[in-house]
Length: 51
Image 1 (tube, rainbow, N blue to C red):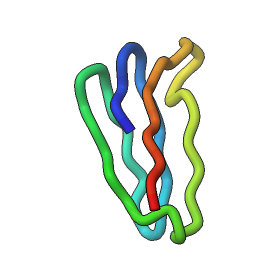
Image 2 (image 1 turned 120 degrees about the vertical axis):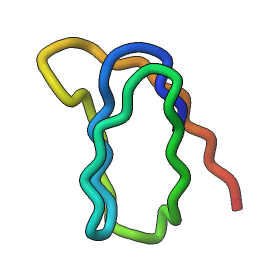
Image 3 (image 1 turned 90 degrees about the vertical axis):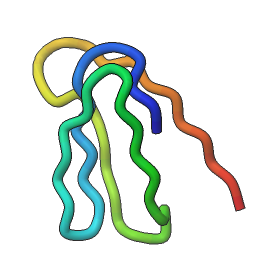
Image 4 (image 1 turned 90 degrees about the horizontal axis):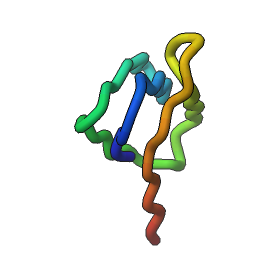
């Protein structure tokens, strides 16, 4: 995941992160996970999925 604008909250496994514009995250999507905006403002991000 690559954050374009805003703040993204990413929760996976035992991790609870807030990413800001320009930050990236990579994780095994077999882990339970969820993501969304970290505050009341919108967030824009790119997500690339692969095998």
